[in-house]
Image (cartoon, rainbow, N blue to C red):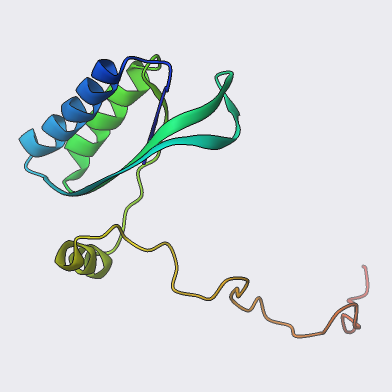
Length: 133
C-alpha cells in the first residue's frame, strides 16, 4: 500500500507509481493488480497532511526489487507520505492472482479474535498464585 501526497502534482504521483512498477518488473516480478482508492482521509495527520491518495499494488516479486522500490519511495518523501509492504503466503497470492482481486486481510467475522487461553470469564478468579521466594 502506498499513500501519496495529495498536494503533489498528478503527473508526479503517476510518475512515482510507474517507477515503482518498473523497478518490480525489471527485477523479474509481475504486477497482478493495481487498486487506486483515490483521495481519502487519513486516520491521523502525517507530515501535516489530513488526507492522502491510497494505492494498493498487488505483485509477485523477489526480495531485492521490493527493497529497491521501498528505498525509492522512502527517498521521495515529497510524493510518498507512507508505504507498507505486506508479504502473503503463496496460497493467498495464487488465489488473488486467479480472481484478480486484492488479498483479503482476514476471513474471521468482525469482532472475533483468536482465543488467548484461560477462559475465566469477565473478572473471574485467576487461580492460585505462586509463592514468592
